[in-house]
Image 1 (cartoon, helix red, strand yellow):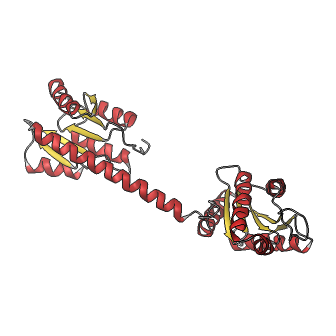
Image 2 (image 1 turned 45 degrees about the vertical axis):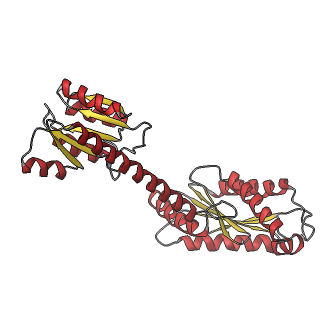
Image 3 (image 1 turned 90 degrees about the vertical axis):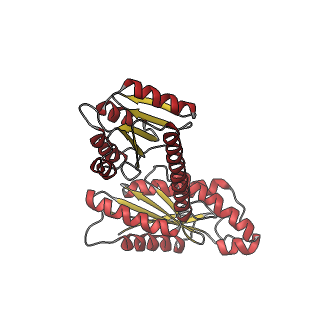
Length: 316
């Protein structure tokens, strides 16, 4: 079975699995009184199928059920949950130490014996729900921190750190699959003069507008547009041949021109323009990402030497 990525329900969703219909009804009523959604399963097989389909926030599981007992069921639930384990509370008439130990060994986080003390059950479920909510809040915050750590604050493109990581990652993937990898380096022409003429705040706005053009030109989910440094940008294009990379470079060049950002200090145009260097290779054990970067940098240098406001291509 595939790993499940749980999402918190509102109100929380509780799966009650017990072969005793009267017990299921009693547990359902107690949980619904506290405002939870409740779904039921009559045995272990139904529990696993319902869990995979509905992704509950908490599972209340009887230990003794026909076909698949609660211990086996709990172990399989945790296997389906992957690294983000779903809280399972075992409800059973078994009170011996071996059963308690077995319940926790297969992944249960709590254990209640029958006859049920309803007040205790409700408090323990409340605590489990609070723990699930806290975990997901922390996970969301962590994902946001990871996203921010990979983003350039000014342009909202990937930052240099993310670029380095992604280029290495895609290099290895293209090496395994023997597919082409392209890289474009892009530099705003005479940007220092632009900053000196219009001021850094206007310069920052120029960077943002150019970044938007570059981002819109990296059309596929696997394409990565990054701020490489200062007024220089980079676009990683996995599974893209030279011809495809040239089309992206042309799109960026024309898109920046269409912005019509005035640049009285430019020596090539009265609006902001860019120079671009394109490189392409099929990775091998004899080459490296640095060689692809150097080739794109060489092509960018050539584009500047030939008068700027253009792209040049260099094979690595």
